[in-house]
Length: 419
Image 1 (cartoon, rainbow, N blue to C red):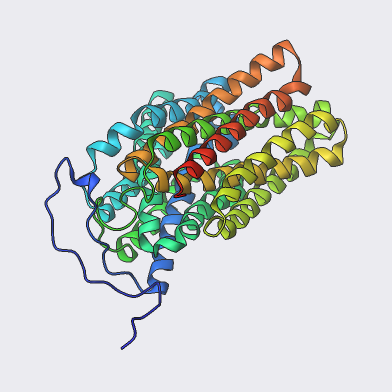
Image 2: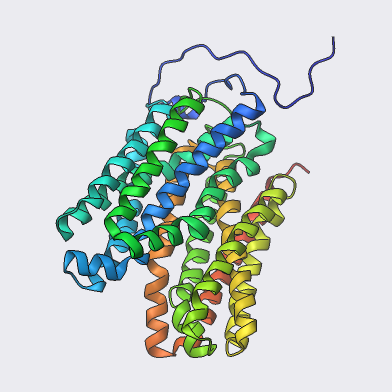
């Protein structure tokens, strides 16, 4: 009888193997593959978790006045909530991922989302600023581990040839958070108070927690094809991390000051800012979809293309930033570029990871947050020395360096090809 050609062909489950310090280098055989419907349902639950974490991370930005008035602190103090959150993720991602390497993925992810639910609910009852900071730090600790393992788990749900589509499922939740989650939570906070916005998000997390507990199959950290890199290469991995830092820093050098750029340079009214940001969020989702369709068949183009789009968009923003219509279009193009960079480089990390993909993803997550943290600082320096108009140009310079790193990584790959 002919072998079943379907990529969903089940395989024999692996024998139980003890977890030791060297287990990362030799993954267990792949577990039995889920039915496609079950795999997609589990992937949707992971996307829902990413929706919750991204919405929670950025929620203080939309509720600055309400939090400031309710807790009787300055706007800048509330703004620090986002900075503290990012710093925690950068510092603890790799260490916590290493410490939790022996925990099966389903109970770990359920525990992380449970931590999010409880800490977000605690944040809604915060009697003081210090209480809110403590609750946010707990959520950041959970998110640090979550982003280190979620892509690995998602890829493990599908056959290897669907790696890109699995990551799209996770990042789709992030895009929905930008398009729907943060605006909706901000509106709720403005209408009925910031405490109910946090409480509502906690309730949403509880629903997704139940979905994860039911839909996610048992998985061990060293189990299946996603446990280690398909083409492990330390040099290519380091270049991928460097590209991430450069591209994200360059993007946030300009994006952090987008409201001021739109109103002062482009001459748009303040009421136009929200629609432009919504358009950028929609473009972000379009970028994820486009790269997701491309990445499994043309991975090199899927990595270099978004970086080139992001660099070109920022250069043209500097050149034509005084033209309102052009600025709106170019901001959308920059959103497409950044989302494409995020998904393509995350997928590539799982290919070139030198050893365990979860540790490699942890450093990737940390590098992404390094870019988020350093971009505004660079933009501030450009703003005070050259002026607001030059922030996209400075960002483009960093992204172009990222493109050089991508091309260097592709050159290394070609050298490893036989013949």
